[in-house]
Image 1 (cartoon, rainbow, N blue to C red):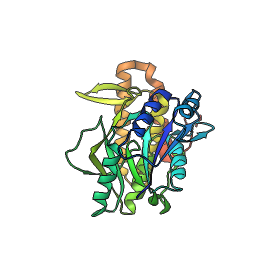
Image 2: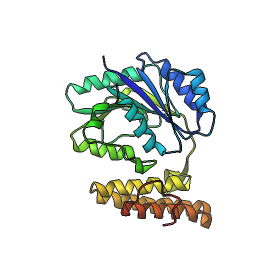
Image 3: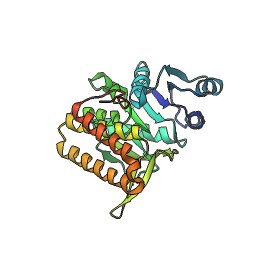
Image 4: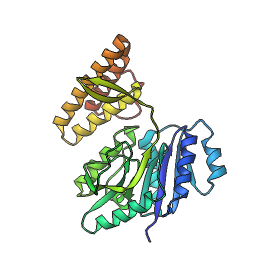
Amino acid sequence: MERIAAVIVTYNNSEMLLRLLEDIMSQTRMADEIIIVDNGNTDDTQNLVKEKFSQAKYIKIPQNSGSAGGYYTGIQAAMVKNDFVWTLDDDVRVPADSLKELIDGFKRLAISHKIAIARSVVFKEPKPKAEILMDNFTWRGCLIKTEVFGQGCVINKDFFIYGEDSDLSYQLSKKGYVFFWIPTSVCQDTRTSGREKYRFFGKTSEIYSDNFRLYYAFRNHIYILMRYGYYLKATRVILYGLKASLCFLSKYGLTSVSKIKAIIKGIIHGFRGKLGKTYNEKH
């Protein structure tokens, strides 16, 4: 029987993490290993986990390495003795049949496809009626075959946050792998903060609130698209940056200049290929 490790990356979010761990322990198809990556937490996470979920493997990183570094560390640990890794953010909830439906869907699709990843449907997304082929994936709610990481596909830790999952998607796609949504498996996103809604020419957009999130999102997106030769898509990202800037100006006026600068700096660094934890650098 296949072995599955649940990998959770967490940062100062012990309350949501504990609820997720309760969900994982209630699965009808239990994970064979639970790996928690502590991304430099400064709260009580470690003590609470050890007290209530001592069976989990707890890996503490000295300082925050973002989602990229966190998942790199967790997946490396999972690869030692597991066939699959189930990647989960610390702010999601999973029904009792979530993992069972994922592995069943993966096995069913593997008969006729070179599949690398099966993904749950996140509540914020439209729920498909049938299994749907995806262009790329994001970490939350994914079941990933660990053997793909032994075939030259790597998680780039230098992305810090945002985009390392998209970059991995492109790597896997070039090797002929495909990814599927499994509509019978659900992963509920419970965090509501981090984005603001704006109305622009009659349409509503959700845009990151924090300057550092804007910087990394635009930098990494541009870098990935340029790396893989998607120049038209890169142009669209720049236009989206202009749209976001106009939204900020219309709502906050000149006080939004720092947000606009974060977008511009991110785009420039993306074109230059300047990765790493660079938001606070001057140039």
